[in-house]
Image (cartoon, rainbow, N blue to C red; front, side, top):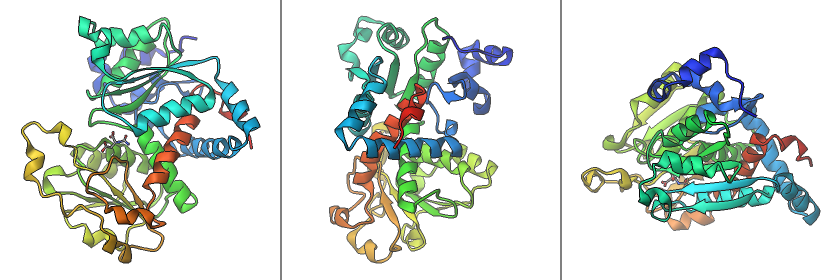
Length: 356
Ligand code: NCD
């Protein structure tokens, strides 16, 4: 069913450049229908209420699918749907967790993981390639190196006669909303509820890491959250995120000294250096060694502090930390599959059928 658009939305939506640079709040209605997300593109779409609902669905899904009867029931919910995974930037976790999330719900999947195997090598524009998918499938999950491309694909698709929902699986160094979703789900499970009043420390290449950007956006949903950004001065959090936090009165501090904030952290979120975005080998000039969580730090942090990482890891967390009960990154991965399955069930409106 084509979405109903108000006059205002149509005028905002008529010209891509105008649309792209418009205030995010004015765009959001374009990407939802009947009170649900249609496309999931930005972390700003994820409200406190929606997150709570998705986490409940994710919890229920993981419980009911433990038994064959439950797993069979759930895998029938979307067995009439087909999904396309268009991942033209490297991915292990996001790809596999989405693929398996689709399978949990019965969505049949196809994939493109490399533009050299698609007609883009024949000169087809990526926009035409994406439009082609909609001839065959009912859902597109996309990871793309160019910031804004996933949004453009959703914008284009919503203007065709056969729109299909698009989920952003990572767009450039810009956004990774479903990573933020699973990160928040991990915090939620670890804290036994919302992260109100918690101190969350994000560490590493904050300038080019899309996970920390998207997770920062989610903090607007919670009360008295305190953020600390720990990074080398070359890779500080970008001003647009700091402005967002200021606008929503979310307190944050910035430091290069990891040890100064470790003790008081309720969650420590480590990230790797994002050197794929280097223009002239700038990462090599930065000393990343202080942004390393070592075994000895386990003695310093709170007993309840959770240690997270979106992964892949390089040298940000000493492998000996893995066996500590506060190391949450492997569970975080798995949480991703359930949170993404919950999101897909929400988009197709079958979430309410998933009951304990
Ligand atoms: C992250 C990504 O792709 O942005 N990985 C992921 O999705 N789990 C983080 C990273 O690559 O550093």
